[in-house]
Length: 77
Image 1 (cartoon, one colour):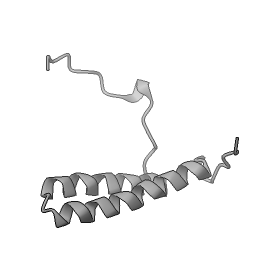
Image 2: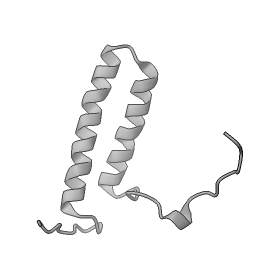
Image 3: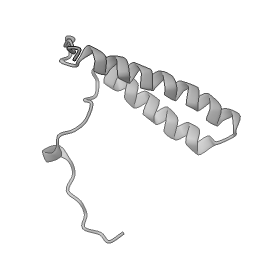
Image 4: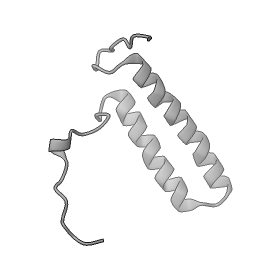
């Protein structure tokens, strides 16, 4: 099993490579969605692209811990 080295943000090199790959694929998907005229899909893909960039730069954590999440509203769906 390959070891995952840790960068200065405490994130593994392989994890950050995967995030970079996801971001690259999102950019390509956004172009496809734009060519199809799917405006809402473009917007949502752009938001994911921005999020991936924030994770890459260290401005945002990969995920939040269970204890830090908002409590459910208990509203029926």
